[in-house]
Image 1 (cartoon, one colour):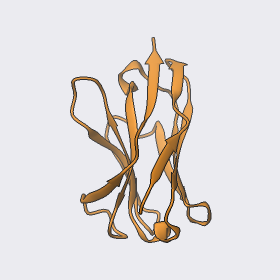
Image 2 (cartoon, one colour; image 1 turned 30 degrees about the horizontal axis):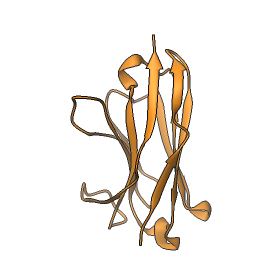
Image 3 (cartoon, one colour; image 1 turned 90 degrees about the vertical axis):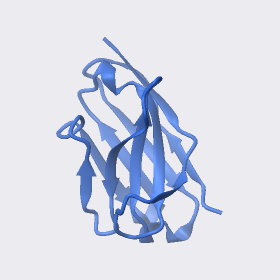
Image 4 (tube, helix red, strand yellow; image 1 turned 90 degrees about the horizontal axis):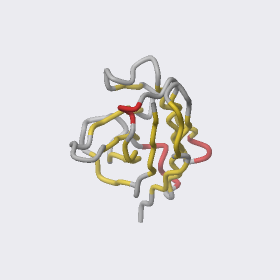
Length: 120
């Protein structure tokens, strides 16, 4: 069974930084596209960033230049480094996994989420 466990959320002031981490239970994690999503109260879940097995990355326009997604295949983890956080980044952040090595948009597994709160 695939399990994704997020950590690293918290409360910061505007302009601050946080690093989220997602630990995947399956040893075959390195074979799949991984991503980060977020959902703010009253809003739809949106994709923040994705990374495929070749370490190619994609980002939402709202976070480009501020967030960086990376993966450490030897540790079965994927991280989201967030800089210059803004109040509008406040949301529950979720780690997700596809069933393919390339990011096709078909997300099959989700973590429970970690809360990020940015105050002005």
